Structures are given as C-alpha cells and as structure tokens.
Image 1 (cartoon, rainbow, N blue to C red):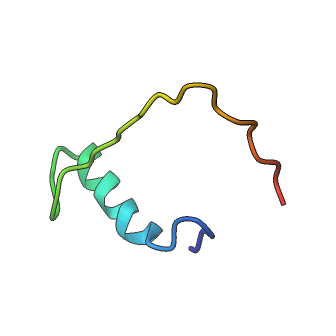
Image 2 (image 1 turned 90 degrees about the vertical axis):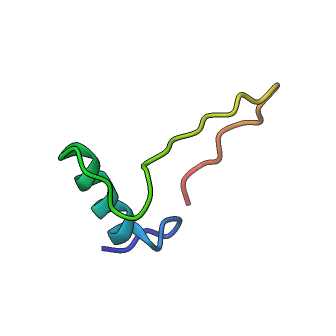
Length: 46
C-alpha cells in the first residue's frame, strides 16, 4: 500500500500492530501534538 505523504506506511503499520499486541519493535510508538496559534485554513483536497 502506498500513501503520498506516508511512503513508509508498511513499516508504521507493523509498529501499530505490535503496539496493540502489547509489544515494541525497534522503537516506541509516539504521537506528538503541538498547538499552533492562529492556524491557517485547512488545505483543500487535490
């Protein structure tokens, strides 16, 4: 499977699968959200 903005999707998918089975592959699964003041408009789909 290929995603334009996520070319390593298969590798990421394996990490998520391991996470949901209580395992860790080569590094921990991390999600970071950074608040932005006055964000611009959401881009429209191509």
